[in-house]
Image (tube, rainbow, N blue to C red; front, top):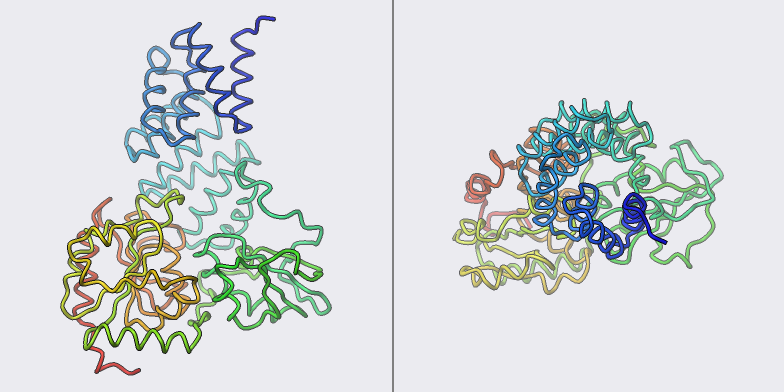
Length: 458
């Protein structure tokens, strides 16, 4: 039976939605062979290319399909999203505004809002997220975008409520276990056990671990589920009865909540953030060992830990990571011993840097976050990008500079050089996109004032 073009396109879209990229691509190419320039088939191929990370091909397909079809709102919306991912923000804004002007799709409003977030125009983004939710109340992307925009401005109470939509996205739906126990709402549990699941990335877990003692004070018994990588540091938090890194060892419990929902349940505002640091600590014996190693390497110099690269899978990694070459002025300072804390991706840059011999590469000894915490505690200062290292340093109460892109993550708020989450951190923001030179210059000005080791208390 011969299948019509409309049916073929519908089938290709269905395959794409279920993750069968090869099947969707095959059908779309077949349609294009019969109907060259077919807009829907081109958009499916562009979506496949985008999903595979081939943004150049995606843009070529979308721009080709625009010929004679500039009034297609969906096409302009897809072009807006793809351009934003390539960093062509002004072009993305133009395409997004065109999509919104032509059509009435809530998704187009969200894509345009994402562009304004990237441009640093948060008020305009808020308006667009609001319109998208009014048009499509169940659109999780819009709710999550709104949460980030609200919290960027310090509007935490509505922001946390919107943040609860984060596990209703297509890519996150079903990630959490299907608990039969009710979600805790912050009420006192005089006769019940609460289970808290540390479910997000490393940095999130370090940031929100501050809530575990507060939650423990409101329940009869608190137990925590945490990954094996994080357990050595998270299990040192006071309050919980026990920490588990395997589901089969977990005892029975009565209520449950994710760690990142605790700020919502406990009514966090920007004024009442529990910011008594340190709320994480390191094994004193490991700290002592690191102090000995550092003293031997540094002599009279101050010791400064460096983290310059984030996890590549993070969507903002390209904008937040600093090329090690940009840190050359720090590596060349005579009054400090640069100490590499860079583990995994980005660490290869050290061996390729002409100043690598000036750096103590501690990364091979950092087998888990417990070890990293001990080293950070022994260091005089930390310089890091906005990654887990920043949150760990802040949670440990260590003095640190956090190098931020011009438009940073919501948790660093707007325009501040301090953090209500972490009193010991200093934030250094780009003045222009990609300009790490001025950031490093301000950091080096500070590092020149670090006292030598013999003048510091142990």
